[in-house]
Image (cartoon, rainbow, N blue to C red; front, top):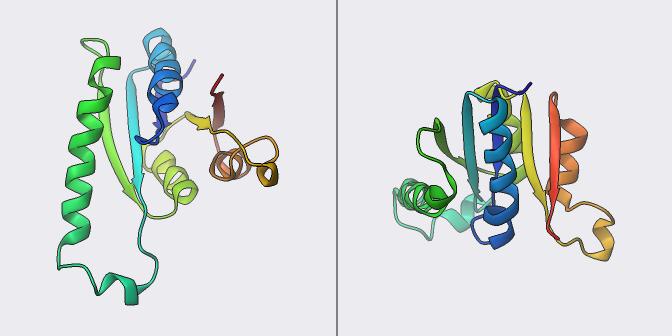
Length: 143
């Protein structure tokens, strides 16, 4: 059914590892060839803010986040599963959509975090991914 699954996780949200990643792994075991596991490093947005950080700071942060991603998902990945680890940079939903195209994903798996009243049913990033994705999106709720 789905051959190329992209799962976006927030490493600071334990439910993303326990529920979202676990769901993607289960789907990938059943039908997939490659599981693309990604997290996003937000940018500082303003060049004025960026000037206060040392040169190469973003690359260093991305490398540290990639290492953390590999270590934290390791217990959830079965032996022999083909996994690509990805650290995207920028706005979460735009980066997820961009990586879905780049990896040729045919399914995006994303968690819906506890919404605030203003977000109604889905978190703002999950909702935007659902609205703008060109492929199927599975939204995993934290229960």
